[in-house]
Image (cartoon, rainbow, N blue to C red; front, side, top):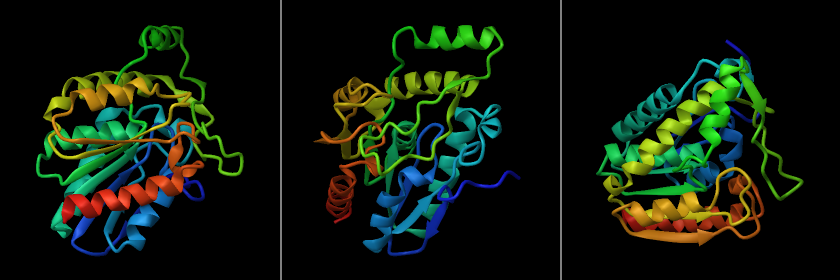
Length: 248
C-alpha cells in the first residue's frame, strides 16, 4: 500500500449521539477539511472523515478509481456512523459536496447536509475536451488543487488531475444534479464567489432544485477550498450552529 501523505490521514472519533460525516474533494484529501472535522469533534460530536479511494497518496493510485469507488466508501462510512449514533449530518467540500447530496437522496432520515462549493453540473464543453485527451492517450492534466486565497494555507492535493476519474465525476455530477429534488432535509450551503474550480452557479443550481430549506452563506474572502481559506472560521461556526439547529 502506498504511504499516505502527512495530514491526509482519515479520522474516526467517538463522541456524542450526533454523528457527522465529513467528505473531501476530488484529488484532495482530509487535510483540506480537517479544521471543520476538528470543529465537530471539539463540539462533542461523533465524527467520521474517510480517505476516499485513490486519494491522499500519489496520483497513480487514483487512475483506475471512479465515482463508484468514492460513493461506495462514502456509503460505508455513513453506515458505520449511523450504526453508532442517533442522528446524522453529512458535510462535504467540492466533490465531497456532490457525495453529500447523493447520500441525502438515499437517506431521507438525514437531519441535514452542509455543502461547501459543491459540484452539481458539468461545465459546457469540458467533458468533450477531457474525452479528447483520453482518446489521445493522456492519463492526467494539470491539477485543479490548492485554489486557496490564503498563501499561508496550501492544500495538499495532487499536482495532476486524472482524466478518466474526472469523466466519471462529470457523469455522477450530472446525475446528482438531476436528482436534487430528492434532497428533503435542511441544507447549509457555502459558496465562494471567487471560485476557480467549481462555478458558483453550481451552488445556485443546488439551491434552486433541492426540496428542503436552504440557508446560504457567501465566503467572500476565499477561493474554492474555503474550508482552509480565510473563511474557515466562519464555516466552522455556522456549521456548528446549523447542526445544533437541525438535531435540536
